[in-house]
Image 1 (spheres, rainbow over the protein chains, first blue to last red):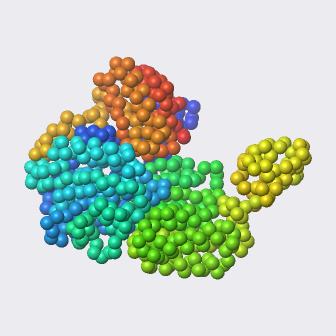
Image 2: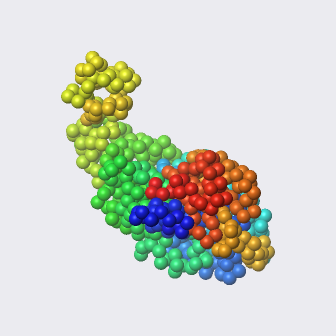
Image 3: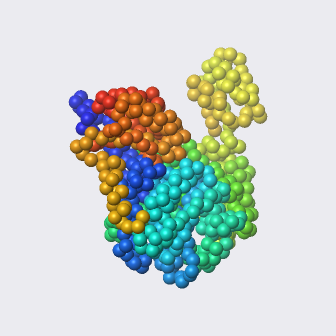
Length: 510
Length: 121
């Protein structure tokens, strides 16, 4: 509590005057975000003031490349972009390849709906990413790096440009860094915002100047990546952890988290949650803690239904798994995935079939079209979901849909297609009853799917005030003043304007 | 940069500027200027604080700067006041007018404007 403020005199605890004293902040642990909200991201001196570029200095002057890789391996750091591949192993594969040229690529093509972790790191602490890329370059023997960032992040791009310019001016990028003979430079490549370009092979293809389409693996980028040379691709948040791991040691990092998922994870909290925002928690924190303690619960006293993680590649976690400690393996085991860190909370007003439909609509839009299972499969899957939300499907359709999901997963070329059916499969797993309600009872339990809804005026509650009739944009409501009104269902467009207008709660949604 | 010593020199020059030392009268005001803050209207707030601090003749002891995402998006624009030896104060949902009052009462007068702080929000 702030010593300046002494309002506890009347027996009440004083309300916090500092963010640090709020429940939102107290359970957080900031490693990747340690400088965000503290330093001026456009001033390299401020980064240096908080130990910036010390880690690069340490590896260049005190450590052999293999020692750097050993620290990364020992720390247990895993890729924060979603896949969760051990970073140290990735580096080791690339380091072992003998080649005249190697590359470091930073994947800043954050594309999941509702995710803004990487943008926040780039905007708040761009030098941490540059420093980590140089460290990675030293470890694997690369002297050039690319940051692939989407053009929709103009502030992040501008701050990266400023940061690269400052680092070059100080000689922290360029030739003979710290007089060690090590050379490393970084360029920015702007993506046009295609979701598939976050997939590493498509990203490389895009940097090479071609249309962003994935290519088959193997060969993996560590063997044959950018322009055919060994390349490592790390996510922004992964990189932001690295300077701290070098300075504080692998054991410090490994002391946080769970057995197989070390460190912290940044989540972008969104949806039906009080504290929309950016949070960083030690891995192993439960979903309940994130939602009710840090997130402040669900507004309006509504009931929690599910949390969506992993974006269009992930799944929904229902209430019975609220106490599962969040780490890579646990999320996969319950049918979702860590993903890049988008966490969308859904309450009783969200229809799970509609949620699956929303994500499929997204993947259909974003499928690059190169392979058939993804291009046509996701389209067919979306059509089936639309049939369900329209109330025109049969139980057989649900089975067919599930079968199609497995076909798409096992036959698609890249992770976009391989994971696209996940939102359908996980909602089917936990909310099959909602699917069946749509199909069998022709009813949407959450009251979202318009085709299955109807609005009705309860005659006993209607005072005949005419407010609803005036609010209706299509003139579907009629009735005399002071006598109960009626909705003409053939005209009604189910916009809900009448229900929002009625002061007497006389209009119900069925 | 040809040696680690050069890096150390910059760090020494910056000592006490980002993390304030106790016993000085320094004040550092940071305005959350990530995309979320800018979208919520942080830029005019930053401009107002800079101008008011200048008008009050406090530019020597008060640093005003932008920073990245402070984290609690729903309460943007956010302004945090760090004073040496004291807990920081978080102001929420800032406007240029609120900024004027904060510079007047808190920065000049030394009394935080409690009603604009994060409180139980």
